[in-house]
Length: 468
Ligand SMILES: Cc1ncc(COP(=O)(O)O)c(C=O)c1O
Image (cartoon, rainbow, N blue to C red):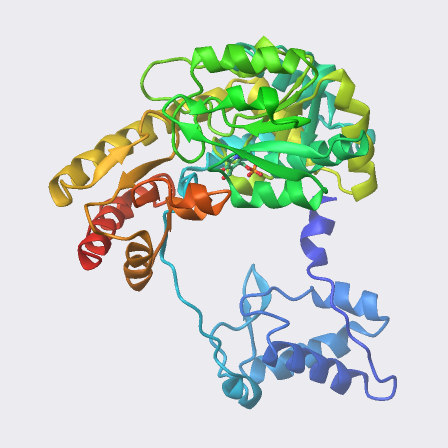
């Protein structure tokens, strides 16, 4: 079986002229190599397999391969079959193709991005291997809309233990990241007649777009040193609120305990709370700030993601959804036609249940804490008149700019140095909020790989200096 698979090679779409089989095969391969549809390094099917696919003699395939070998388009290596040769001279057509230019950002310092190079590849591979070895054939079919049972059970246990969430496996719905969960919950709220949703005056732009796309009207609530001003919920006539209680995004403050209590009171009057716990696992100051959900489990949708502790490429998030919204969320998901990849879910179930996910969180917490300290130290030296805020948790901080320096000038100076980052105003829900604070940058210290970290901070400092 494994040998059959290894020998089968690529599937090629080739239309043969029945009168000139060798020539038409040769031409089809040559064209595909020259126009790049067969990329350099691609391994071609074994001659026997391709001959069987095309219903022609094996010799005809061997002959076509040999001509292309002679032209230098293919190369044959013992033990690794026939491949498209690297660095073939460009065809006249590709030489004339227009060059498209765009600003090249080499370092992405937008708020909240994780270090992709820290992805625990070997642990993930081992989890994948174990999950596949143990998967029944039935589990490789279409999976349940709410997600696979082992992952939901593993997450319920993990969230209760690590985040204080009140959850049974039956409450967990697995989605494509927090983004999809939010879209589904927004639709479920709109379907049951909800019209208005409160959001934090600073937040994730795409999340506001997701809410609006579901037909909800946004009502921004101010954010201050205690987090979002939830007192205003009581007379804002909203059906729901989206917020980041553990670590306000992007200002970095946790929701104070007085405000948590006030939020729970509002929820008890029928309001729906959507808790985005996107980086609740990454606190550095030893203060354990549990999930809000445990104060109002019947009214709160708790949302989390593997995008930070593993990678956005895993594409898995989760919701702990109260009974009143569960059917609506699942119905919304069925209507989208989307489902989360069941093999990835099985692998994540193995990783979470074995403690590998916890280990990834702990390793990253140590790594991000060290970065945070280096960031603060380097800035104190290089830009002592800029103020670093919101460093107690998460993968980014706020950098209040020196007197007279404008956000847009620092963004532009950063772009010239290959940096991609935004001013705080870019995260504001409305104009009044955008001009309510002194000019401040949101700087992610998660994403640059370790080796480029100091270069990234130096570029931030140089961008501020250029904008003075
Ligand atoms: C505030 C906030 N919430 C949630 C997420 C995670 O979203 P997802 O799970 O869709 O990757 C992010 C990602 O950057 C974020 O910034």
